[in-house]
Image (cartoon, rainbow, N blue to C red):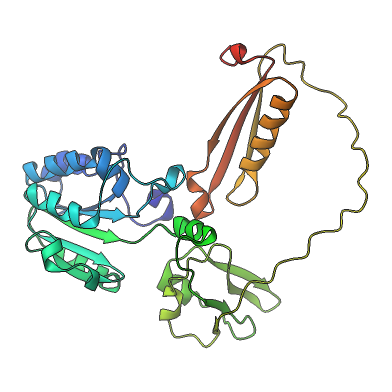
Length: 318
């Protein structure tokens, strides 16, 4: 994803091989140092081995281990085992890394006796300063960045398993001048363009806002905070009396597998359509196979649902 965003990101590899290409490239380039992002789930299943070989090679690299607290790409599951930010610091220390930072929204929550020897703590607002410090370090270093995935936060708040802050932030379009500083400060996809008669301004998508309030760091009089307010629910549409729906003009014979690809972006009901088609086939005594691709939905990205309809389960693979 970073490669698509014009962030001067180069090289990529499979999950679990983060940083491996740099070990081979480092002796043949004038670049002195690189950063490698590594999710906590990937770190748990195999990424720690990539870190081990980076330490052994002596390459100048800083691993940014993103402790998202959920495997968001596949539905928000926890990693398949026990893993905490404190444990990660001890593992990194055991592998031979001595320059380790634990960065979070609440660095005071991690006392010195709970983390590996020599680990420094910092607030997430200090991340840029921490990175500038570590890029001068020789050999392998690491940042354990603790922040629950935004999509998982929204999911847990909706289920009532995580506190939902009472404060909401909106942008007054009559005051906004469309400078975009709020996007620069927050780098948040919930700050969206708003086309008006006076040009492009900004608005906050309340359905995707993760309420970290980083957009407020800029100096802007158009921002309004509301404490205790709740989103107004739209009235359901009046569909009237639909009556009996007409039968489709033609139906696939299913003499051979019939494939359907449903495409869209996160939040438009793509997966729901796939599920409805599969259930309809089941009700009619037929079989179906559905493969959903929804990992980028949390970033407003593409979502796909591949549906295969067949007369019997034994003919799915034909």
